[in-house]
Image (tube, rainbow, N blue to C red; front, top):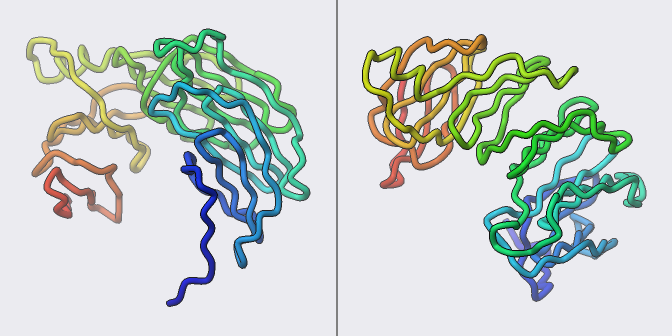
Length: 259
């Protein structure tokens, strides 16, 4: 292998990276979106967007479908950009506060692109947005720091106060909302404790909630606990599912395989 090209823009990048045909798309810490030729590194275009001085853990988020690239910056603005000519198709702002104090900084999970919908889960609201027009289909007062997941027509998420919520993506209707802590307490017949969910996954139509310890909880899709399983050690990385095994790195960076 040999180095083909390298570019130093003298500013840190602050986004994931998307490939679009012959182009690489990413954004820097000043919320400038860059489009590069992936073969020679030539800068095709850059798109300045709103900059914010104060920053939290949220980084710019990029997603794409066959026609558009979607860019959510740290200011809270969501852009739809044509993959054909990189012109802006539409943009909206999802940040509800104009006060840029540390307590009012915008936060969101990464963009979820599903069919003709974008799902944006911010620190204040869950948005379901039409990806073609930018119109808001649903705006629900739910906050979560864990990326939601989709199965069929349903969106599953865990709120900051540990509720497992199922939402119909077509109607925006909340199908159910269950107290994770209370359900675990009832299942184990123990005193209710405050637990912390690290990540959420769907495996064989079951919901897997990995806690910030050595346990994960299997919920069936209707919101009832199926089982609670203890892993050999707490996961440090996000788990990967291969066949009948769960793979992850523990806090000592050892690869752990659980069947």
